Image (cartoon, rainbow, N blue to C red; front, side, top):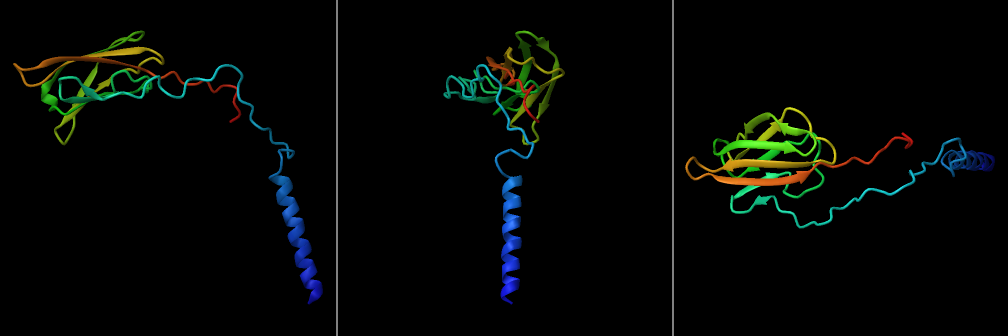
Amino acid sequence: MRRNGYIVLLVAAVAWITVAIVLGTGKSGARSPVPPSGRSPACLPASTDHSAALTGAGVDVSPAPGTGTANPNTQVSFRGVPVTDIQDVAVEGSRSGYHRGHLYGYFQGDGGSFVPDKPFIAGERVSVRALLGPAGRERRASFDFRVATPYPTEGLPG
């Protein structure tokens, strides 16, 4: 009986040492990742004081005016006005030019999204203009945002 206890202890010790070696300090052939040299991208915006509300329009938009982190495949959303009261949407990228697309209404009836036919270019400024409101009382609205520039990942271990 005592001999079985020693065998169990010996097996446990060998298993513990094996696990320690495999998960150890990287000497098992695994390379530890080295971050690329150079300046890292800014992770935080210069200002966190962004509002999605367009001044005087009673409409929230997305991406929020002045944001710098929009996805190249983003859509431009208007919320707080029926889609029938969103007219003449014009979207232009500083490098990609004018964007054609379609305006799709929300099922709940409180807005719509302009979905461009082509993506924006990383780092460019996008200007949006539209007429918002019922016919005869529409207001011109405009805002802009920036498309994020992805951090390069080539050379990083996968």
